[in-house]
Length: 267
Image (cartoon, rainbow, N blue to C red; front, side):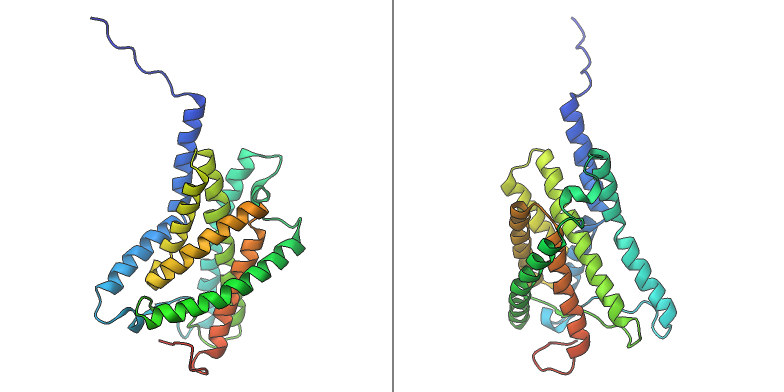
């Protein structure tokens, strides 16, 4: 009886798909995929804790060294900088893939169309911002959301600049990884446009699950809209601008209004 011949090496296309799949999983594991797992664990924790969701708080932009402002500032800047490393990794991977276009320009994050990016982003932020606030207030009132505390930093000179920098970091990281990079790689892996849209939207909702069911559903809906607009515009630039403006208003607005207006929940 003849022995079965050993299988040959995988074809070039299959090998490339395997490498791209591994690369995508690694990028997500180093960034927002890990955040999604962390949010799921956090959500399980709040569900199993006494009290309703709205009686618990999800705190963003907190102090890392209370009473030591310079050390606190160092930790804040360190956290913002290291959170952007996955973006630099994506830029490197895209540059290796297509040196002629180069890095994040492949995704439409460059200075070639600043007016387009800013005007589209501002309009999108205005449309989403108000809707998102009403959705959050309604979800919290219904008991589906935690009380979100956008910031609890000390009143020091660097507070507002750090909040703005944090908002910019969130915007760049999320839109580059979850929209531009992920859709590109899933398309190269043979995913249908509908499946890729669903994956991007569910991932966005998942790493906001620490806020509660409302945070998950609201951000998933935002993810669907952002994917559709990215496919229409071919650029993540407007999405980064919109996301940054939404977060800046949320962070700075909370810092200025918390405890001064009755409609804004505080922990």
